[in-house]
Image (tube, rainbow, N blue to C red; front, side, top):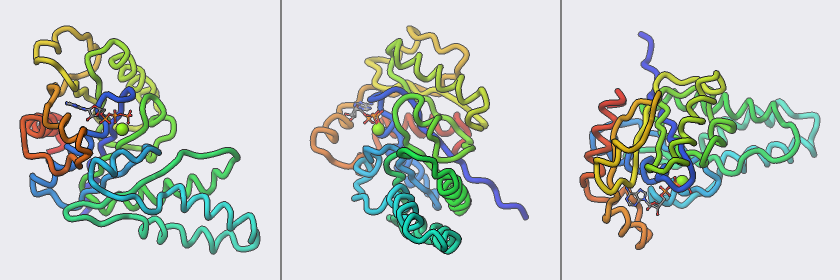
Length: 253
Ligand SMILES: Nc1ncnc2c1ncn2[C@@H]1O[C@H](COP(=O)(O)OP(=O)(O)OP(=O)(O)O)[C@@H](O)[C@H]1O
Ligand SMILES: [Mg+2]
Protein backbone atom coordinates (compact mmCIF):
# COMPACT_ATOMS: atom_id res chain seq x y z
CA UNK A 1 0.00 0.00 0.00
CA UNK A 2 1.32 3.45 -0.91
CA UNK A 3 1.22 5.87 2.03
CA UNK A 4 -0.79 9.01 1.42
CA UNK A 5 1.33 12.08 0.90
CA UNK A 6 1.15 14.70 3.65
CA UNK A 7 -0.87 17.85 3.16
CA UNK A 8 1.71 20.60 3.11
CA UNK A 9 0.27 24.08 3.55
CA UNK A 10 2.54 27.04 2.82
CA UNK A 11 1.16 30.27 4.28
CA UNK A 12 2.26 33.25 2.17
CA UNK A 13 1.55 36.96 1.87
CA UNK A 14 2.72 40.51 2.43
CA UNK A 15 4.34 41.50 5.72
CA UNK A 16 2.04 41.86 8.70
CA UNK A 17 -1.15 40.51 7.10
CA UNK A 18 -1.53 37.70 9.67
CA UNK A 19 0.43 34.75 8.20
CA UNK A 20 1.82 33.69 11.56
CA UNK A 21 -1.47 34.09 13.45
CA UNK A 22 -3.22 32.06 10.75
CA UNK A 23 -0.51 29.37 10.79
CA UNK A 24 -0.99 29.04 14.57
CA UNK A 25 -4.77 28.88 14.20
CA UNK A 26 -4.48 26.21 11.49
CA UNK A 27 -2.33 24.16 13.89
CA UNK A 28 -4.90 24.72 16.62
CA UNK A 29 -7.84 23.68 14.43
CA UNK A 30 -6.06 20.54 13.18
CA UNK A 31 -5.33 19.51 16.78
CA UNK A 32 -8.92 20.29 17.80
CA UNK A 33 -10.14 18.13 14.90
CA UNK A 34 -8.23 15.22 16.42
CA UNK A 35 -5.59 15.17 13.71
CA UNK A 36 -2.29 13.56 14.60
CA UNK A 37 1.13 13.77 13.01
CA UNK A 38 1.18 17.54 12.55
CA UNK A 39 4.43 19.39 11.83
CA UNK A 40 4.68 23.17 12.25
CA UNK A 41 7.63 24.67 10.37
CA UNK A 42 8.78 28.20 11.17
CA UNK A 43 10.52 29.40 8.03
CA UNK A 44 10.70 33.02 9.14
CA UNK A 45 14.03 34.06 10.72
CA UNK A 46 12.05 36.17 13.20
CA UNK A 47 10.57 32.88 14.53
CA UNK A 48 7.13 34.37 15.17
CA UNK A 49 5.42 31.01 14.63
CA UNK A 50 7.30 29.63 17.63
CA UNK A 51 5.97 32.39 19.90
CA UNK A 52 2.46 32.06 18.49
CA UNK A 53 2.64 28.40 19.51
CA UNK A 54 4.30 29.18 22.84
CA UNK A 55 7.57 27.46 21.92
CA UNK A 56 11.09 28.50 22.87
CA UNK A 57 13.31 27.92 19.87
CA UNK A 58 16.45 25.91 20.42
CA UNK A 59 18.54 24.81 17.47
CA UNK A 60 17.46 25.78 14.00
CA UNK A 61 18.19 24.05 10.69
CA UNK A 62 20.42 27.02 9.84
CA UNK A 63 22.49 26.46 13.01
CA UNK A 64 23.04 22.89 11.85
CA UNK A 65 23.89 24.04 8.34
CA UNK A 66 26.42 26.61 9.60
CA UNK A 67 28.10 24.09 11.89
CA UNK A 68 28.40 21.62 9.03
CA UNK A 69 29.97 24.27 6.82
CA UNK A 70 32.42 25.31 9.56
CA UNK A 71 33.35 21.70 10.31
CA UNK A 72 33.96 20.87 6.69
CA UNK A 73 36.24 23.91 6.39
CA UNK A 74 38.43 22.53 9.18
CA UNK A 75 38.20 18.87 8.29
CA UNK A 76 38.17 18.72 4.50
CA UNK A 77 38.81 14.98 4.38
CA UNK A 78 35.67 13.85 6.09
CA UNK A 79 32.82 15.61 4.26
CA UNK A 80 30.83 12.44 3.76
CA UNK A 81 30.89 11.54 7.45
CA UNK A 82 29.83 15.06 8.42
CA UNK A 83 26.96 15.06 5.92
CA UNK A 84 25.84 11.64 7.09
CA UNK A 85 25.15 13.03 10.55
CA UNK A 86 22.93 15.92 9.41
CA UNK A 87 19.64 14.06 9.20
CA UNK A 88 20.03 12.87 12.75
CA UNK A 89 20.76 16.45 13.85
CA UNK A 90 17.70 17.85 12.03
CA UNK A 91 15.61 15.19 13.68
CA UNK A 92 17.06 16.19 17.06
CA UNK A 93 16.27 19.86 16.43
CA UNK A 94 12.58 19.03 16.06
CA UNK A 95 10.59 19.88 19.18
CA UNK A 96 7.85 17.41 20.13
CA UNK A 97 4.83 19.03 21.75
CA UNK A 98 1.45 17.73 22.81
CA UNK A 99 -0.29 16.98 19.52
CA UNK A 100 2.30 18.34 17.10
CA UNK A 101 5.99 18.72 16.30
CA UNK A 102 7.87 21.94 15.56
CA UNK A 103 10.92 22.80 13.50
CA UNK A 104 12.57 26.22 13.07
CA UNK A 105 14.52 26.91 9.90
CA UNK A 106 16.32 30.06 11.06
CA UNK A 107 18.07 32.60 8.90
CA UNK A 108 18.19 32.15 5.17
CA UNK A 109 21.39 31.29 3.38
CA UNK A 110 24.31 33.63 3.81
CA UNK A 111 27.07 34.37 1.32
CA UNK A 112 28.94 31.73 -0.55
CA UNK A 113 27.80 28.67 -2.39
CA UNK A 114 27.25 25.70 -0.19
CA UNK A 115 24.73 24.23 -2.57
CA UNK A 116 25.50 20.70 -1.59
CA UNK A 117 24.65 21.28 2.06
CA UNK A 118 21.54 23.30 1.17
CA UNK A 119 20.30 20.72 -1.28
CA UNK A 120 21.00 18.00 1.22
CA UNK A 121 19.08 19.83 3.95
CA UNK A 122 16.09 20.25 1.65
CA UNK A 123 16.18 16.54 0.90
CA UNK A 124 16.28 15.76 4.61
CA UNK A 125 13.32 18.04 5.37
CA UNK A 126 11.38 16.58 2.46
CA UNK A 127 12.03 13.07 3.76
CA UNK A 128 11.14 14.08 7.31
CA UNK A 129 7.85 15.61 6.21
CA UNK A 130 6.74 12.20 4.93
CA UNK A 131 6.40 11.10 8.56
CA UNK A 132 3.56 13.58 9.03
CA UNK A 133 -0.01 13.95 7.76
CA UNK A 134 -0.16 17.74 7.98
CA UNK A 135 2.64 20.25 7.60
CA UNK A 136 2.15 23.99 8.07
CA UNK A 137 4.90 26.31 6.84
CA UNK A 138 4.87 29.89 8.08
CA UNK A 139 7.21 31.80 5.85
CA UNK A 140 8.87 35.11 5.38
CA UNK A 141 6.88 38.02 4.06
CA UNK A 142 6.42 38.64 0.35
CA UNK A 143 7.99 36.68 -2.43
CA UNK A 144 10.93 35.59 -0.25
CA UNK A 145 9.23 32.43 0.86
CA UNK A 146 8.84 31.27 -2.70
CA UNK A 147 12.42 32.17 -3.57
CA UNK A 148 13.95 30.66 -0.45
CA UNK A 149 11.43 27.91 -0.06
CA UNK A 150 11.95 25.19 2.48
CA UNK A 151 10.65 22.56 0.09
CA UNK A 152 10.38 22.19 -3.67
CA UNK A 153 6.81 21.05 -3.52
CA UNK A 154 3.81 21.89 -1.32
CA UNK A 155 0.24 20.73 -1.73
CA UNK A 156 -1.58 23.90 -0.62
CA UNK A 157 -0.51 27.47 -1.17
CA UNK A 158 -2.55 29.59 1.24
CA UNK A 159 -2.35 33.20 0.12
CA UNK A 160 -3.16 35.57 2.99
CA UNK A 161 -3.98 39.24 2.55
CA UNK A 162 -5.84 42.10 4.11
CA UNK A 163 -8.06 44.12 1.77
CA UNK A 164 -5.27 46.53 0.81
CA UNK A 165 -4.30 46.94 -2.83
CA UNK A 166 -0.67 46.19 -1.91
CA UNK A 167 -1.56 43.04 0.00
CA UNK A 168 -3.62 41.68 -2.88
CA UNK A 169 -0.91 42.62 -5.35
CA UNK A 170 1.66 40.65 -3.35
CA UNK A 171 -0.44 37.46 -3.28
CA UNK A 172 -1.10 37.77 -7.01
CA UNK A 173 2.64 38.10 -7.64
CA UNK A 174 3.42 35.15 -5.33
CA UNK A 175 0.85 33.08 -7.19
CA UNK A 176 2.26 34.06 -10.59
CA UNK A 177 5.85 33.32 -9.57
CA UNK A 178 4.89 30.00 -7.97
CA UNK A 179 2.74 29.04 -10.97
CA UNK A 180 5.59 29.83 -13.38
CA UNK A 181 7.19 26.65 -12.08
CA UNK A 182 9.37 28.06 -9.32
CA UNK A 183 7.38 26.17 -6.71
CA UNK A 184 5.28 23.09 -7.30
CA UNK A 185 1.86 23.10 -5.68
CA UNK A 186 -1.51 21.45 -6.20
CA UNK A 187 -3.91 24.13 -5.00
CA UNK A 188 -3.82 27.83 -4.28
CA UNK A 189 -6.47 29.87 -2.51
CA UNK A 190 -6.96 33.16 -0.72
CA UNK A 191 -7.82 33.88 2.89
CA UNK A 192 -8.63 37.53 3.50
CA UNK A 193 -7.84 38.70 7.02
CA UNK A 194 -8.68 41.54 9.39
CA UNK A 195 -11.86 42.62 7.64
CA UNK A 196 -14.17 45.12 9.33
CA UNK A 197 -17.16 43.23 7.97
CA UNK A 198 -17.82 40.47 5.43
CA UNK A 199 -19.02 42.92 2.76
CA UNK A 200 -15.45 44.14 2.34
CA UNK A 201 -14.71 41.01 0.27
CA UNK A 202 -16.87 42.53 -2.49
CA UNK A 203 -14.54 45.50 -2.74
CA UNK A 204 -11.43 43.56 -3.71
CA UNK A 205 -10.57 42.12 -7.10
CA UNK A 206 -8.94 38.72 -6.57
CA UNK A 207 -9.19 37.53 -10.16
CA UNK A 208 -7.90 34.89 -11.07
CA UNK A 209 -7.49 33.66 -7.50
CA UNK A 210 -10.06 31.65 -5.58
CA UNK A 211 -11.43 33.15 -2.35
CA UNK A 212 -11.63 30.52 0.37
CA UNK A 213 -12.89 32.74 3.14
CA UNK A 214 -12.52 35.95 5.09
CA UNK A 215 -11.62 36.42 8.72
CA UNK A 216 -12.74 39.47 10.64
CA UNK A 217 -10.59 41.66 12.82
CA UNK A 218 -10.78 39.71 16.07
CA UNK A 219 -10.60 41.44 19.48
CA UNK A 220 -9.54 38.20 21.11
CA UNK A 221 -6.54 37.82 18.78
CA UNK A 222 -5.73 41.47 19.47
CA UNK A 223 -5.90 40.96 23.21
CA UNK A 224 -3.74 37.81 23.05
CA UNK A 225 -1.23 39.83 21.05
CA UNK A 226 -1.17 42.62 23.64
CA UNK A 227 -0.61 40.10 26.43
CA UNK A 228 1.90 38.11 24.34
CA UNK A 229 -0.10 34.95 24.87
CA UNK A 230 0.30 32.03 22.44
CA UNK A 231 -2.60 31.82 19.98
CA UNK A 232 -2.72 28.09 20.51
CA UNK A 233 -4.46 28.91 23.82
CA UNK A 234 -7.19 30.97 22.11
CA UNK A 235 -10.71 29.70 22.90
CA UNK A 236 -12.32 28.06 19.85
CA UNK A 237 -13.96 31.30 18.69
CA UNK A 238 -15.37 32.54 15.37
CA UNK A 239 -11.88 32.96 13.86
CA UNK A 240 -11.14 29.29 14.56
CA UNK A 241 -14.50 28.35 13.04
CA UNK A 242 -13.59 30.39 9.98
CA UNK A 243 -10.21 28.66 9.67
CA UNK A 244 -11.97 25.31 9.92
CA UNK A 245 -14.37 26.31 7.11
CA UNK A 246 -11.43 27.41 4.97
CA UNK A 247 -9.58 24.14 5.59
CA UNK A 248 -12.67 22.18 4.55
CA UNK A 249 -13.12 24.29 1.41
CA UNK A 250 -9.40 23.86 0.65
CA UNK A 251 -9.68 20.04 0.97
CA UNK A 252 -7.25 19.99 3.84
CA UNK A 253 -9.88 18.68 6.24
N1 LIG B 1 -7.86 38.57 12.51
C1 LIG B 1 -7.08 39.35 13.29
N2 LIG B 1 -7.65 40.18 14.20
C2 LIG B 1 -6.90 40.99 14.98
N3 LIG B 1 -5.56 41.05 14.91
C3 LIG B 1 -4.94 40.27 14.02
C4 LIG B 1 -5.66 39.37 13.17
N4 LIG B 1 -4.76 38.71 12.40
C5 LIG B 1 -3.55 39.17 12.75
N5 LIG B 1 -3.65 40.11 13.72
C6 LIG B 1 -2.55 40.90 14.32
O1 LIG B 1 -1.83 41.50 13.26
C7 LIG B 1 -0.45 41.56 13.58
C8 LIG B 1 0.36 40.87 12.47
O2 LIG B 1 0.00 39.49 12.49
P1 LIG B 1 1.05 38.34 12.16
O3 LIG B 1 2.29 38.51 12.95
O4 LIG B 1 0.32 37.07 12.25
O5 LIG B 1 1.36 38.72 10.64
P2 LIG B 1 2.50 38.18 9.69
O6 LIG B 1 1.95 38.23 8.31
O7 LIG B 1 2.99 36.88 10.18
O8 LIG B 1 3.64 39.28 9.89
P3 LIG B 1 5.18 39.20 9.39
O9 LIG B 1 5.16 39.43 7.91
O10 LIG B 1 5.84 40.30 10.14
O11 LIG B 1 5.67 37.83 9.75
C9 LIG B 1 -0.29 40.91 14.95
O12 LIG B 1 -0.27 41.93 15.88
C10 LIG B 1 -1.54 40.05 15.07
O13 LIG B 1 -1.93 39.86 16.42
MG1 LIG C 1 4.94 36.20 10.62
